[in-house]
Structures are given as C-alpha cells and as structure tokens.
Amino acid sequence: MRRLSSTALSIALVAMSAGFVMPSAATAAKKEKAAEAGAVKLAPSKQFVPGAQEIQKLLAASDFAGAKAKLPEAEAKATKPDDHYFLGNFILNIGIGLKDEALQRSGLEKMLSSGVTPATEVGKFELVAGQLALNAKDYAGARDHLAKAAAVNYGGANTEIYLAESYFGEATANVSGSQLTPAGKALVQQGLPHLRKAIEAEQASGKTPDASWYSRGLKMAALTGGASQAEWYKLALPHVGTSENWRIALRSIQDANHNMTRDETLDLLRLMASSKSLGNAYSYNEYAESAWKAGLPGEVKSVIESGRSSGEISQSELSELYRLASDAIAKDKASLPSSEKSASAAATGRPAASTANAFLSYGDYAKAIELYRLALQKGGVDANEVNTRLGIALARSGNKAGALEAFGKVNSTGVRKEIADMWVLWLNSQAA
Image (cartoon, rainbow, N blue to C red):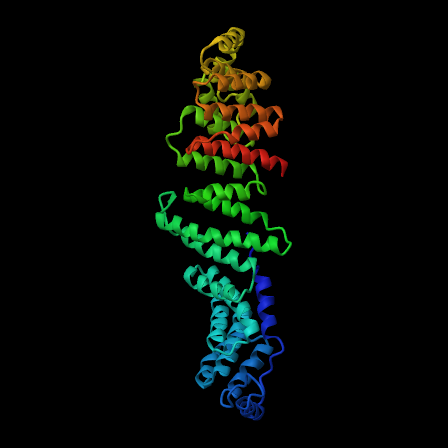
C-alpha cells in the first residue's frame, strides 16, 4: 500500500518551515505592537526571542542535539500562542534532523495546539501528524489527526488510506489464535469504507488507484467473514484478479460455509481451476477427491494432469487416485450413449442432469449443455445446481452471454448463489 516515505516526509516537513527567520528582540517588540493593531498575525514575544535565536543558529549549523538541549529554556520563556507555534516549528525541525518521529509529531502538535496555525496549513499538519501517529501504532491518535485533515478536505485519497490503516492496524492487535476477534472484525469493517473512499477519490481526480489498495481491501474483507466480502470481491477482483486473490476469495467462501455439500464444493473448486487459483497439493487433492466421489473419473484424471503439468503438484502425487480414475474412464465413457438415451425417455430431468455431469467432466460441453437444458425442461431436479453447471459448461465453451444468463437464474439465498455470483464475476473480469 502506498505510503509517504521517510525521505518524502522530511522534505515535506522541511518545506513547511523554510524561509522562517527569527527577528531580533527590538524587531519582535515592534511586531508585537503591530500585531495588536492587526498588521501581522504572528510575532514572538521579546523575552522569547533571544533563546529562540540561539536555537535557530544551532539548527543552521545542523547541531540538532545542541538545539534540542536548548528547548526547555526556550519553552520556559514562551508565553504567547505565537511563541508556542515557533517553538513547535523548532521541535519539528530538530526531530527531522535527528530522525526522531516522536519529536516531529510533538512539534506538529504544539504548532496545531497554539491556535495560530495558518488555516492553509492545518490540513497538511494534521495529515502528517496522523501518519506519524500511525507509524508509532497510536491508532486512536492517528484517527484524531486524520479526521481533522479530512474535515478540511485535505489530503484526498492519502488521508482516507491512512484512516483505513488506523483501523486495520488496530484490528491486527485483536487476534485470538489465528482469527480476528469480534472486536478486530468490527475495526476492519470501520476501516473498509475509508479505503473505498480513497479509491473513489483517486478515480474522481482522474487517477488510477494503486493496485495494492484493491488487494488490501479484498484481503481485509476476507478476514471478517461479513457482508462486505462480496462487495470487495466485486470491486477488487476485476483490477487485481491474481491467482492469490482468487484463492483468498474462494477459500473465504468455503471457510464461511462449513456445511457446503460435495456438489457445491465441486463447483467452487471448478472455479478455482478456471481462475488458476488451486495453487497447491491440498487444493488439487480436494478437487480430485470431490470429483471421484461424484463419479467423474475423467475430471479426476484431468485435474491431476493439469496440476502436474503446471508444476503445482509433483508427478508422483495423487498417483493412486490417478490410477483408479484412469482405469475407470473406458467403462464410464462406454456407458454414456445408453445413459443419454435413458435420459431422453425419463419422466424427470434427473438422469439428464447426471449424464450432463459426465459430459461436462470430459469437456464435451455441447452435449452437457443439451442435457442440462433437457433436465431443466423435464423438471424434478435442483434447478439452482443445474443452472450453475449449465453456466459452467457455457462459460467453458466460450458462450459468455449464455453463461451469464444461466448463472443469473440461480436464485437461492445460500452458498449456491454465492458460487454462481463468483462465476459471473470471473467471466466479467476476463473481459475487463
């Protein structure tokens, strides 16, 4: 995620104080009287000036430690808001010189609390103070500063990014075992809208949001198991549809639905295969086992060969299951003509759906599509499941419009609908 670098921060902060020269005591006295008449806004008190001039000389000589040692003496002479503003400026620059972020933040906060910070600088100071607080893991302090920057419309997307991170950072401190606690999940949910605002702000300004912002939102949403998951998958995957992100999204659906049926799991794993997000031996084994239990030896053999050819599993892995599937294929294929004939004559669509499943597993999508449609016409089947698989067959045959129509007819309220929606998202992401 894009953040200001320490170098950029130093440059930005130095620029804030560039051109400031502490006046002589006599000049300061004149300015103080003029300030009372409204001629100038800022003028240090005459008793503050001598000590401040010493600090300024030390800063000019890059003697930051020496300047820091003089701060208590100068602070004791600071009586006006103007004095405290200038003192904060010194503290800020000493912090920059010493690479002390706590000191930098202290200087900014003193300038802000003086009450005389120029209105044009308030948002900038609040944003940088918020970032420094975030770096120090003071999440509440960061949010306080960043909210004030946002209130004056300063920083745009950066302010919203840092606000999001203040919630995400605190959430990671609320973990039990390997899971976020309810409090941690609530913090993530508070942070996600700010991340979305950052993306929208970049787009509104004609810029392309950083890809890491989408990935960050997707991964944080996946940790919550809440309603925001689907929203973030839809938002992020068209932009960052990596194998890793698809795996995170699809596995999070599994994690949130422990009672998924074998057939639901199989259709989700098929999407993992299409999105190239199976990734490891565990996933290939799960897919192969699910297909074997569904009586689909052709798909078992195909998925194992795919994993081996991609190098994601070794040539020796799943060898027994591969042997069993290979041995079963000839007999299974030989039964298909009679199964197809029986499906046509059957009173319900169940035989047609079962036979279509076999053709789908062998990659004969035209036959699978024909039989899935026959099953829906005859009825007596789980229409949501059949429409999902009709959509898969149409998608794999290259008929995107037909696939979208089939997936759109999946109208359950459970995980079957989530799976269909993710297939739709994948199809549309390919076009994007």
